[in-house]
Length: 141
Image (cartoon, rainbow, N blue to C red; front, side, top):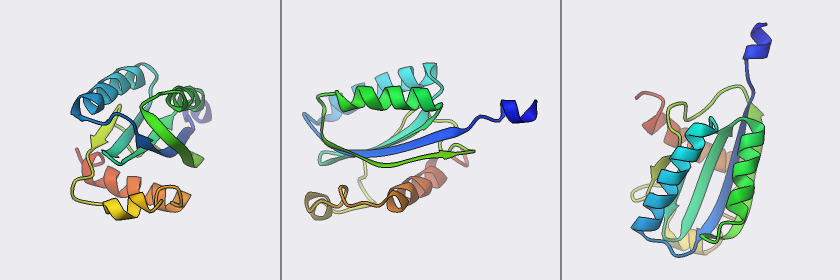
């Protein structure tokens, strides 16, 4: 019985270039994501700036896959790349239906992103960025 209650957690990380980026678009993306993700038991985070989206989705495999399929057709994304996909036994963002971070003071320079850093980001590097982010904002709240 215990093993049946222990659900596996799917983690998926992707990057894309924003199209039509502004504060209103971000507010809308985060609000809709939080509503939909709460309904579908998905948690995660969106790291964003006018030159990048880096998103981490986690929880039920089918729901994460369905959410990613919707994102793939979303016109607010260009040059979408799946960076990592794995199954784990724990969530990183246990209390956040969709945590947002504007990448104002950490991570990568504009030059690094423009030079293609996100396309060449390894699964380990992408996961490490979200591990760091989750420890800073979610694990101790």
